[in-house]
Image (cartoon, rainbow, N blue to C red; front, side):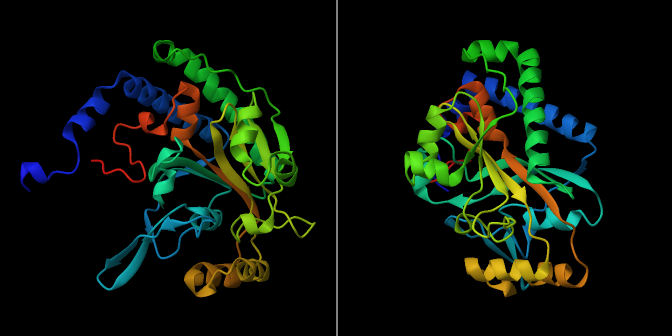
Length: 314
């Protein structure tokens, strides 16, 4: 390729790599990962390696560009999350977690949100026989450990960034989805986040707002799931909840959401013939949490080689 036809700006890449904000944030992110992994192992969670390609992946509840890979006549998808693999992994272990890279080719309107990358990492976890409340309690204790640890080991970086991350104060406030809609309107997340001074759980999300695998609550209209909303406009950092695990219930939820069972053939076959245990879990965005801790205006500063929707990068 001729030098003049290069689309990626070399100067832009080098300036980013040399940016002291990036260096500080990446150091903080490294500590977030270390602390989280140690905490989960001490809680009895077994670490798994991520699944990158699969014949089945998370259908998600928003538009992304799907990536298919043809390998010697076999079709694979890039995993958009390991939700189904997490459920199946509980046939082997009671508690699991994965430091999982995700590729979600977001639409270009996400480019200015400050929260979106199309290549990012989440710590994904799942526990057999757990409830939503069990997972919320686990995350609250984990966040306290992360903030305490980062404040001790990254003093220099936090001082440079001129931030003193406020310690989370469990238990976090719980806000019902429909109550948030009533107070702020349909597009409520940013307004809710701006009004918070501590993280808060968004719970009881309506059935059509989430995927078929989130467990239906006894009211038949909302789900036993949750998001964690960060304060001061930083928005959602965690999604999770209890899971559907009974074959007929999963098929009913697929019909409501319009998912084709043939797209999940081997997963459904295991559920029907062998069964999977009831479980709950979540995934939290490592870069989003790091952005919040570091007080950054864009999540791209938490990675050396960020992939922002709509931008070409190395």
